[in-house]
Length: 393
Ligand code: TGC
Ligand code: FAD
Image (cartoon, rainbow, N blue to C red):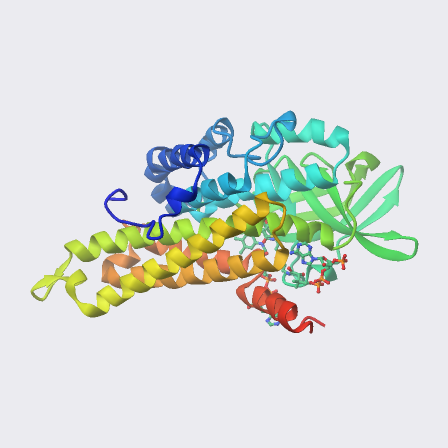
């Protein structure tokens, strides 16, 4: 079906290098042959397919842009984007697993870690011998992470952590958590990053149950009660809210490609359905109102692809700015959500069953629109960029 339905309306394929296409095709095959046959059951059960994690590592999808000297694939951000797009064509939970490991765990260790931390953790994370998670959000501090109450206090040559992190992807399956906490330095509280191994006394995790979105993904709460970690577990170059926000910029970049993958999956399904489903005297794809919906979907997908592609080239050239990422994350996720709702509508009653991928993507995209900065937070970030006036104060 995918070969017959054009989802590259503006011929972006021509702008990709041979290597970029090759890696994209590997990701596409992995999703089609190994992931999609499992996803319905995972979503029903509420489980993540852990057995595929070694394959993600083997294919080089964990730490795509991390230098090879630290075990990463050393490839471009456009390659990372293309992989994210393919993984999320499978499921947002699959892309999230790779995003968290690469952008929210390996990136902060690479950027803020000591040489010892990089040499120890990065190759293990790339080989999936260790799984990581990123703890920024708290029960009462989501959109405003700067208000966090998790604290680190110097004690016995290390730090004592206290606080709770909520909504943490991969939390209970991780070997190491990158945890953001306030530390008093010269009379001022400064946000610093800490590495907390799962075995540390005073560190407990519990899964968040009852999710109707991201069912094929693990989401947890992390609780720190007098959890002592050694001095060496501080990410020495982290400092201020800017450090976790820099990590979010990396992950949001991947999301702007990924959400488009989910929209493509739903569009392909809707076109196929519209061509074959007969109501009244002919296929529903022959009715003007259905065509209008398909046109909106393809137009939004094409615009999103162009935003993501250009953002990727800017990133690889070292010119990408966080506000540009905000625009792509905001636009590409909200249009993917709109596209997916239109696809759901075209399938009528069949659109609400998991026989088709649409309702699963639609439910997932509700989360993607919220996490990594809600649609409105990115709108306000851009509003601040345009006017120079902050709506956050
Ligand atoms: P603000 O004054 O704007 O910023 C503080 C400092 O950070 C700098 N900065 C950034 N740097 C890099 N990338 C960005 N995106 C940045 N945004 C801001 C800024 O220049 C400043 O630097 P400096 O040198 O002046 O100190 O801080 P604020 O308190 O006003 O907050 C602004 C706001 C609301 C935009 C920010 O807090 C925010 O982004 N809120 C949303 C929170 C969020 O996205 N949480 C995500 C948690 S992780 C997650 O959801 C993972 S999901 C799993 C997956 O990805 O698959
Ligand atoms: P709130 O901040 O309470 O927002 C609620 C509503 O208020 C939103 O509509 C928002 O736009 C609006 N709002 C807030 N402030 C303003 C304002 N100033 N002006 C106008 N409107 C405003 N976090 C992590 O740290 N690590 C993870 O791995 C992670 N994974 C996640 C996985 C899942 C499945 C989910 C659902 C969340 C995850 N998160 C993670 C948390 C996610 O980043 C937060 O949910 C998100 O940042 C929003 O925070 P909140 O849920 O507290 O909503």
